[in-house]
Length: 310
Length: 257
Image (spheres, rainbow over the protein chains, first blue to last red):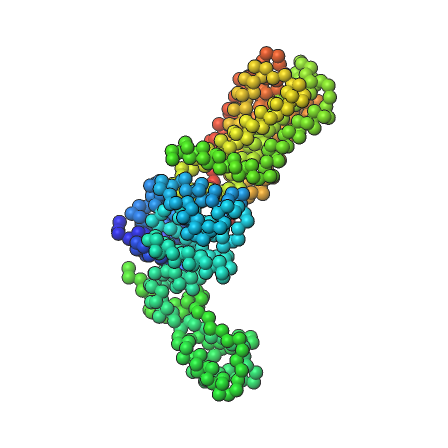
């Protein structure tokens, strides 16, 4: 159908008479990390499970490694690796036993120990899965996804539920896959995760593609969703702060905050004003745009966000 | 690796896991042995078995063997496969190049090994401690019924996974159904002490036929106990189980979508 590793055209899927995917189109190139971003219920898992061959579609065309996943057979499965969203492992087996069993299912598995080392579990290889932390278990999932030496790896929300340290560890692991020449299809509901890892990002909203582009392109489009907040200083009116930063500051309980598309300039203005007037600002926070912010932003300026060539 | 070798590897893997789970090990291997000891401790002397008077140990040894076959083949397999399904493991396995039947075959081979070993232990204890005679006709009947009974119970165990939406449901249903079947099939209470109507109900189900067939192999001199009606009942239930399993087997966990 094409020279893309994954090609999706006008994909539709309904559950119980309600259409959940409204004819989405995108493609994934060889060797890239593709970020598929969306909130819960946006249709990410439905899409990835159609690509993985678990679900049938109701309309459109899908090709993964040149084959239709619905009818693809054993040879095709030898070329893809899966890390599912919610699946547990039997706690009584060791890491090594578990990965070794999965290695047997594939025609040309990778070196077992090298795979375990590559996911950072070298010193846990003999440990039973039931004794691992959540982050370590997720690494076992990735090892299972990689042990067949796949050309394409599907990662369905690999960091959901992980603590920040485990999440950063997983990011480093996924970044390493780029060097290994794998094509990675990554779903996530963390904006930060997609921007950090993905070469290209598609944002899915309510079963339709809301935005598409590289992390840089999306940052430019969605830049002014950066939030700056701080505790409301005593005896200072909203109007005074608004005048100082040159934009409308809003109050949310004990907090004041505003959105900025030039965080450095606006922070400088804010801090300069505070120093000049002897105002002490506490708990100053600068937050990157969350997915919710992005959706607010997309709704506000659809013409900027739409970058869908088809 | 060929698929047959893969199924063997899968069975070894499953057996290793089985031996590491104390709960299933106790329920499937230790419990029948305790039942044998306890029942032989309660009942002394002889029981009437149809027109024969046989020692209680001769009555209970084959009865507990039949119960053990249902525990391992039906209950334990039901729990094991439902657990793996709800963990998402079956779904994960479906995403690998391994054919689905390899996993199920591995589980069945694992069950057959467990049944074979525990039946051998039960027979050895009965023979050694309770002086239950084990002759050639006994061994032939034991072998035939063990194979037929295990096949039948495995099919029903796999078919029943569909009815259990959670691991907890399977963990209750498996042992519960097995226990009720044990009572109405004359496994715990000698048939001579049971009301006829209850035995008639028991005859509708496979355990009764497995128990009676095995008991005849042990109790009736010179008889293998192999009867057309008992084998036909096991065959019919087994075939129904296979048909139901093929028609409605579920690979995906319930909370996934």
